Picture 1 (cartoon, helix red, strand yellow):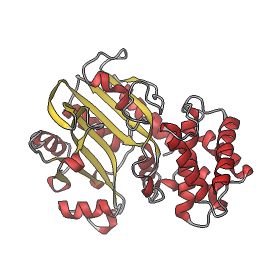
Picture 2 (picture 1 turned 90 degrees about the vertical axis):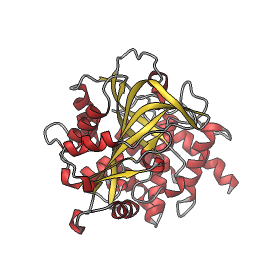
Picture 3 (picture 1 turned 90 degrees about the horizontal axis):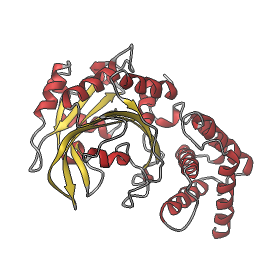
Length: 361
């Protein structure tokens, strides 16, 4: 199943369940000076998660562009990237755990409407509870009612099963779904085996349901929100990896065309992946109005471009190679997101930064 098909199926699935499709917000947050980039689908929706009425209603769905750079040193392994697409659906004070979990399971496993994944290869984690919120027995029971056996449901702490956008805002426990990429090794039967499988990338996270009913202020959970919300997220790159039977995101159709164009620039696979990822992120950032600079968003863009150039064998991306890489990125996203048709502008901005970096080197 191609990435385009996954996007379309996801939006159609939730549209059929009375969700309104909303467009992706810009990668540069409009009203949130606390972060440089949109890092999750829920970020542009924070006012509505806190109780403000959304003009499109209480059930929403979209595919959101995101950039995260905290794992930049991990880029080049099987699953880490700096730009990614988050498939998300939201309930703003409407449905809660039962519907959210049921629909997650249905989309992942339904052959007719969803992805048709094997339910026997799904593993689930839920929140084990602490002083801020109780153990999430309710979610575990819902999973059991859908056919996930107890030995494939694990209770984990805040580090794994609690989500918040930072020190302030809506937050809550979550339930995550993982898919076994190597079932032939045999079933995972306990929490320790599951954690080991996760560390070794044998299982990959394919979905996360966040049950936002708490509020955080200055790093502390202060109480409950006025409404119970659902915020779900599924990374398109990882879903594509699972659906296309690959063991890394760079072999999926999202990266294949770009990887083909960077092959000759670096002899090492990890370096090729870094170049492909960083230039892809750079193009998406430039499309949302970011230009290289020494501060804020522009500094991150500059850093990404210089890391990409530095990882080439010759410390440069020849103009014809740059044009081919940018062309492959534009081809992949021009029908999905706005402002992606300005190929010559993307090349010009990157080329100018490359010239400046040459002088630095």
